[in-house]
Structure formats: C-alpha cells, structure tokens
Length: 316
Image (cartoon, rainbow, N blue to C red; front, side, top):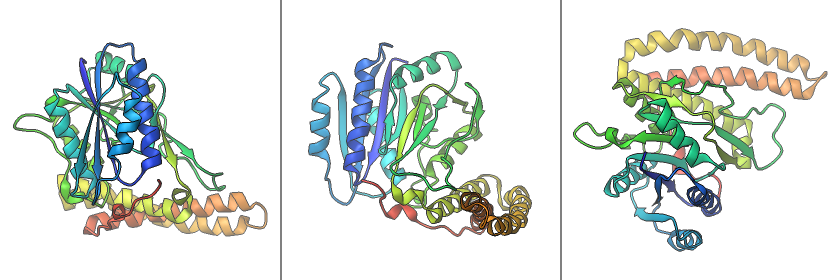
C-alpha cells in the first residue's frame, strides 16, 4: 500500500474530534512503513462549526496533509460517500473509516499496512475497545468484546476501524453507502454485506486497535436494549433486501422465537436473586431483556419498521 486516506465524519462532537484527530496525526507522524497517509474530515451538519478547530489541531502536525469538507445534507452515509469521493480525488489506494468518538492506538497505521501486505484481503477491520467515561453498572458488558483469529474471514463490518481497497470504490461497479439509511444506522454493515456478496474478502486484523469513548448516555439499560433491537432490525432488513422476505423469515423467525421463550426464565431468575445478590439479579434481568430486544428487533426488520436514532447526536 502506497497511499492511504484516513476518513472521519463528524457532527457536533468537538472534544471527541480533537482527540480523534490528534491520534490519527500522531500515528501518521510516527509511522515507519513509508506509506503516504492523508486525513479527510467531513463535517456533516446544518452549519459548519469545526473548521477553525480542525485547522488548529492539524497545524501542530505540518507533516500531515488533511482535507476538510463541509457536507450540509445531514446523514451518516451521505458524509461517508463524500469522504470516499475526496479520497479518490486525491489518488488514495486504500480508504480507512474511523469514527469521531474513537482514538487510534499507537502503531495503528503500521499494523494496517502490515495486514494489507500479508493478508491478501480486499478490506480489513480491527478491534474497537470501549472506554466508559464513568463506572459501568453491574449488568453492563463492553460491546465488541468478541475474540477472533487474525485473518479470519467476515461477512460484514462497521466503519469504526475498517479499510477497503479503492478498486471497490471506483469504476462502473463502485460501491457506495445507501443514503436512504441516513438516520436509521446500519448503513455500514449493509455496505459490507453487499461487498462480501460480490466476492470481496473482508479479514480481521487483531493488532490494529482503536478505542471508543462511551458517554454516560450510552451506559443505561434502556440505551443498550434499544441499540440491540436497532442493530438486529438493521441486520434483518439488510438480509431481507439482499435475499428476500422468505429467506429472511426462515433464517430469523425460529431463532427469534427461541430468544423470546428464554426471556421469561431469565427475568424470573433475576427477580428471585434480588434478595441474594443485586448485581447478579441485574445481570440476569438484563440478559432476559436483551434476548427479548433482539427478538423484537428481528421482527421489526422483517416488517420494515425503521426508527431514526441518528437524528440526535450523543457525546461531545
């Protein structure tokens, strides 16, 4: 890999964006792989707010080329598509997607470059470690806490820590994010499902790590359950669009029914444990509600009932 564009889409998160940009610039400056890296920042808001702050942060790293673009049409997939266009205009060979609430760990660029050179993949994705901003409740479990083997083939990915070869983004069959999903979430996983359906190889990189900041608003039981229902609804909706309603029902209805049947026993066990151990009780109750939220999200995806949680910004 000779030229890498690292993209960040942002909206009303100035403090998080500062930390994110600094980590990207430090990675580029300290990289020893001789890869030519540049940064693309797309501000996606009803008014431009962050240009001066971005210039100030990047001015501390004169070795780093960066491109700022204001995109007034609000919506995550719209901003991501804009960042792709800027990368292609600047002759990137690979495009990286990083969220504005994330920080790149030391050596991230080098780890991704090694993976490009050794794993023979069309796209790469790595771990996202969650960093709570306050003490987590007893029932809470960090998202993305799964273990995978380096080079493992995946069906889809998010855009929190992902690279894709630009040959999939240019030409007649160029992939783009679905802009009809501007506020629903799930446009990233839908994009990579289409990518792997077309034969693209998406592989896991274990040592290219980013850390995301979790504000207190994302550590409530209500938010976690809503997130699970929304994620499952997006997954089912994507499968339904790609494979048809009958295939989606055959795949998700039996599993969802099993989850519903397990919900009540967990809730009963949680209530029974309350006099003995409040933390254990909370974990059991959350597990039951989590299974129920997953099932209800699947049914929502089957019937096409979509919410729009990304109209609102969380964090700062």
